[in-house]
Image (cartoon, rainbow, N blue to C red; front, top):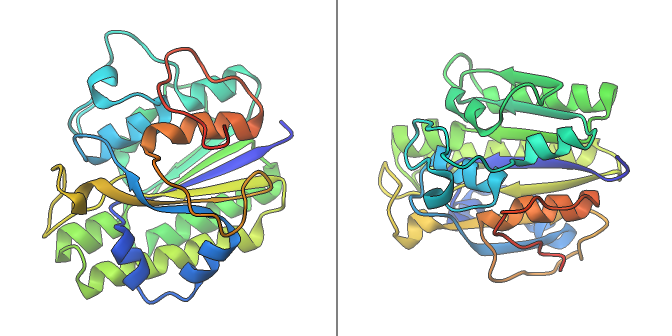
Length: 258
């Protein structure tokens, strides 16, 4: 495919955590891409339901996953991985939390790598490096890079907005920088969170849980433009639009390029 996409999800990243993490590249991200610091998660603001909504562009009441336990939908909705694969695209996924595997139905990936977040220090960085190696050697059409340390080691272990949580975001942004500085202009890079968090939890309708940042870098997006009124359901249609492929019937989100 002519237009390729890398989607990066930083689990549990709040906008105020992003801006308070101390990484100077955050301001560069605002200058380099289009962005929204008040995008919306879905209800419930829980990791697997959120990612099912990202990849299937429908809310949890339609895809049926409302906890971190996967339940097959009564009415199957074509997801982003399956859709790109059916059109001849090469897809890959790198992830640090095992249940995320449920966002796709095999066999639609050419490459998949799981490294448990607690199996080593800085597993997000290891996954990023492995993803970049694969991108360099194989030039896949769509890559999903999922970073979980911000949520697990930051928020749940220490509490949202604590120094350890902010340090996790800081390291995650270093990984985003590595991606943006390594890939060619053939790639659009989209960075999002799935939900925020409060205390040591998330899943509620509190603004701290529901408000997330999103960034869009690539030829199709205006540098320095702040976007309003977008949510997780808009990511898959936007990716389809960038890749110049039709969105499947049933997706409810909208491309932010329309």
